[in-house]
Image (cartoon, rainbow, N blue to C red; front, side, top):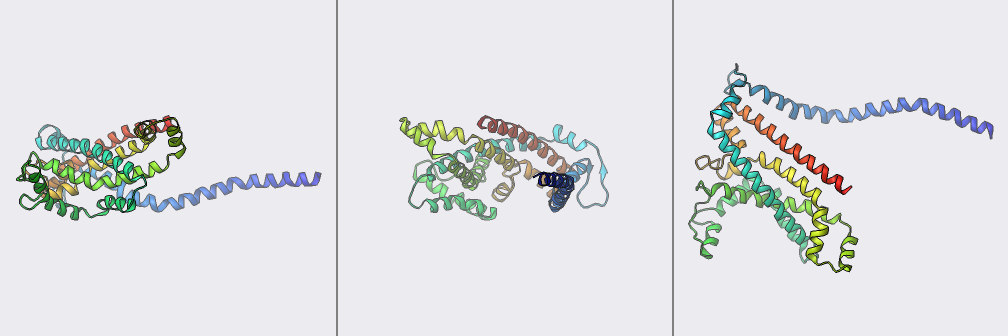
Length: 314
């Protein structure tokens, strides 16, 4: 017994001496596996961001071999002498403030409906999710046809219910932005539905069974059980939706190109116009910096809210 115990102590000391070496080997192995991702991040995220910040300090047309250093002049023009900038800021904030909550509400309603036992439930889920995987060009073509002043189904539907069917949805400055918002909400509601379906299926059925035993109505179960347990998912969707709304470009550019009369210009389309149409790459970079900083600040606020909700449920 004594020899066995002594052998175990020797083996333990040997293993303890080997453990730091093994840990160092595993650490280096982990770093080796992270290297490809780190290289890609540096090339396609860190370097472009650094170049954008640097370029915002120059006056450059995007083609000339030389750049004129202007310091913060681009930002001064942006905040004090460019009325179109504040117009695009208002449009971007309005776009995010409308599309994010409406998309979440529609996605939640669809998820609650399709979480039940329905005939053709999988077919409905697929149908609502299809716009998410469709090309933005296809979606733009479909909605251009729906909004057509003469042959579009939207005017046809409004005419049949007596609300007038002669609107030019994408050419009227008072309607164009709202029309594009409707198309964007239609595009992303299916993705929100999918996230909520996953969250609903993670709620223990015992909670609903206990609530039914206590006599709780279906609406009371949704209000007292479902919605509180979905708060972390809702906060995550608000975060992802806000980031997506701030950088939205495709739908606006395909449907209206920022028109009519800049009525649908967002910060993303203004960056494109300044950089590629007006050949003001330095000024476009300054707008990009403002958009990036604003998005990061809003995201940090929402992340703090998300972490607080997670702590409340922990």
